[in-house]
Length: 431
Image (cartoon, rainbow, N blue to C red; front, side, top):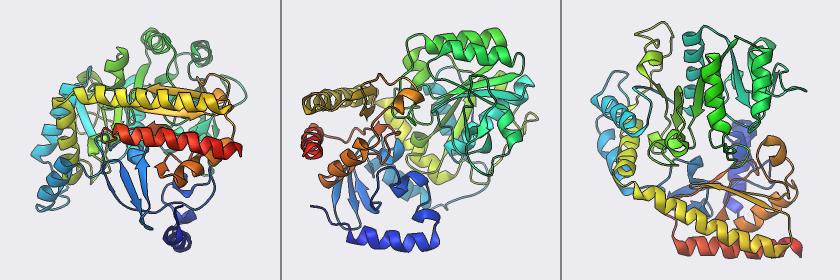
């Protein structure tokens, strides 16, 4: 049985100096209860906490550790580069090289602007869309998360075309008025929102594979119809690929689904675990970004050389070894089948969603296709499952509304151990 003495002590200390003891809310274990585990180190798919407990990792730092933690080539590249300084605040050759690599890998983009987070990338993409179209409103989907900038912290009102209500104190009603919320996978709802705001919508932004209400896939034809509607209405379609970019394949969701986006946002993988984000699109749109055009966006640490070398090294490996994506998907399918067997035998209601190397378990008997159906999951069962798995050395996302992310450093032995742990955990939950 794992002991958490050091993590408990650290959490007590952290709460004295950091709001809630964490620098990102999900880490506080509020959704599952108990004390957060403080991580000391990681290698491959094994996390080690401050009490020296080891866990098989299914978070992968929320996506970027697609080849595993402390990947040798990435670590070497960082060590070599850091000797030259950690930041310049000036252009570097490496920024050109990674931008070219991204343009070569991803369809439908000509230019890339580096920023420092996925939040910043999505915020900037909306600003660009507004500047390009001359319109102010945009549509986001309930259950899709695009970072914590004010315009995105909006939940749906009572009706499909109700103006958004702020989801957090500090977000002004004025900001909320330009954010329209639609239901994921409901094209009729999208059409109604557009009809109620005719000629006023600059963009539709979507997680092509949703990862923030658990892993939720677009229904067949949904993205195609979104693309058609955007073309008809003069609306830009933005794919938030902070999670799916370079994880579903070299070209991300655009390539995976064969759907063209007007703007794409990235994060996670392109920094190899370092703080980074980017937004990208065709010349026609990106030429309005300062200093070429009038839409202003800047950042002292944008294109930071340490983040750039980490991302460039990782992306180069993914670009040169496309078979890695197949290996990852095969491992995720293997895990899916194993979990499906033990869950079916458990007697609990459940659904499993999977796409590529993203997967989620929902304790519900309803197909999970949007936020409302994701919310039908049993809120008492997941915390129990989480902690039973944690006790058995399996580190899952500490929220039922987060996707699992697999890394290719997972071995089939680790997957078997995970499936066995799930079997034992489910049995313990019934006891």
